[in-house]
Image 1: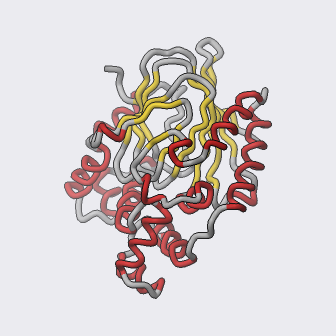
Image 2 (image 1 turned 120 degrees about the horizontal axis):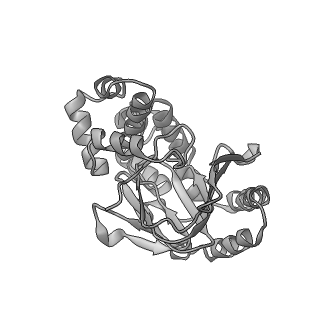
Image 3 (image 1 turned 90 degrees about the vertical axis):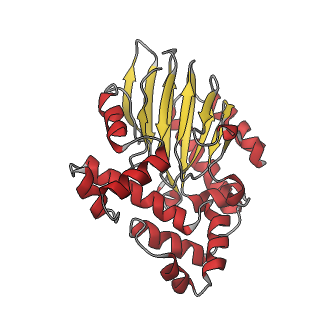
Length: 294
């Protein structure tokens, strides 16, 4: 059953969320349906969260800007956003309407059937990854009259794509689970020993199938751990210590390097946003903040 997150009939603004079907939940983290009316230029800082997001759009284009490497910026009605180690900024100025599919990196490897190492930290339209069928899926979703039917269509489509895709290595899956379950606090040497591979071989295979290096994944997962702790009421210093940073200055430097913001400014952006803004699209993650209008 979908959950209505927020709506505003006056502005034509609505957000819906629904988990994937039970048999897909190890791979598909959920769906987010959205519709935004013409509300002026809107900018959302998207924090690294180790999730691949497939946005299938029915309205005006969305632009994703890479503040660290502007040449990587992209604009399209539908966009695939690979797993990132640095933040991006989503921008739109018109009416956008669509649904975002939240995939684990290993699920994305199966869905796209291509090395994720080729599109880490990238955003591009699905056809750039050889998936013109996703453009057709977006057209089918747009023609459906309600969110529940759209989400059911996504369940069926993703079940077929996952079933037909390449298998990922059990060793990579084990290493990913070890990092996820420890919130990034397992050393790469220990991961390599656990797989029986050399460190170099693990790094190559892990990057190929997740789009991240083991070290990069650990950095993202530690960042998310600190953000969840802060969200639950911890001070920045306590959150940094509990997430495995040497001290708060170490966390502050890492946060700025990964997001382009200080922890304090990021927190201020989140707390000043409208109550209608559902800022976190990924369950259990701190994923974004609405940026002030320029």
